[in-house]
Amino acid sequence: MSFDFDQSPARADTDSQKWQKYAGRDVLPMWVADMDFKACPAIVEALHARVDHGIFGYARPVKSTVDAVVEMFQRRHGWEIHPAWIVWLPGLVVGLNIVAQAFAEAGDEVLTLTPVYPPFLSAPKNSGRVTVQVPFGRDATAGVVAEVNALGYAACEAAYRDGEPWRQALLDYLRANRDLVIDFVAREMPGVSIEGPIEATYLAWLNVASLKLEDPVAHFEAHGVGLSDGAYFGCRQGTHVRLNFGCPRSTLREGLLRLKRGVQAALSSART
Image (cartoon, rainbow, N blue to C red; front, side, top):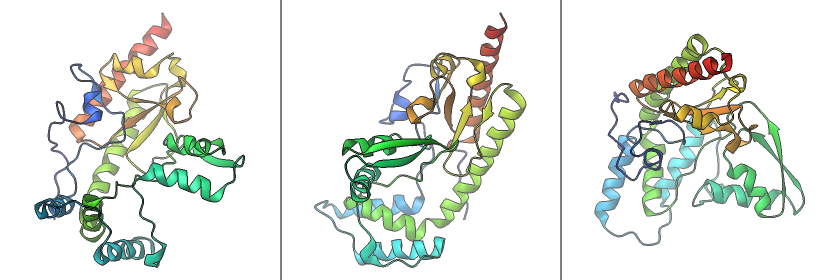
């Protein structure tokens, strides 16, 4: 079975937060952790079937959904879990806040590796705990939990039961994108380095401290590429930006060329 990740539907002028940010501007959005690929066909098919049912009242997972999760852990991690251990939550952020309260008392310190998804930093503070940041040099975000509702359960079951071929093909494509980023930065961007190995997700942390940019995001936006500010994830201001390479390779190549122009402009400015 083959999947085409080189073709992506246009997302400009849609409800995409990622693309709305730069509406009307010649800026490629490569910031928020949102891939520009169609969802797994098995998930889309399951959602169509669930929507066709026509009723979306209060939902609970059925046995086949629970079985799909249990089997995924066994197949992927060799870990046999009991269905009773599964706690269904509406999202990752809710889970982070619950965990902070479950495993720490008010005033306790909660260790968080940075850079990381900001709710990891804010969740302990929300309930009177103390967040302690430890620079890790990698993306410490494990993943994102999909919202669980009537459609969420259907998508969850399809993803874990039938989505593995798509996931493996996606990983192969992302690894090639990652290698392209690593090679391009090493060859074409003097003064810029990739922070740590890219071992998870589709995000590259670029150390741009040597460019001495007061606002790296604004600088690169002016050269046509939208990145995330590392400070938002716990890095020191002006030192890092985050690049999302979860996109078709043609988009990535264009984004890297724009990034290169921004680096060249910064180096040229520093010499004058």
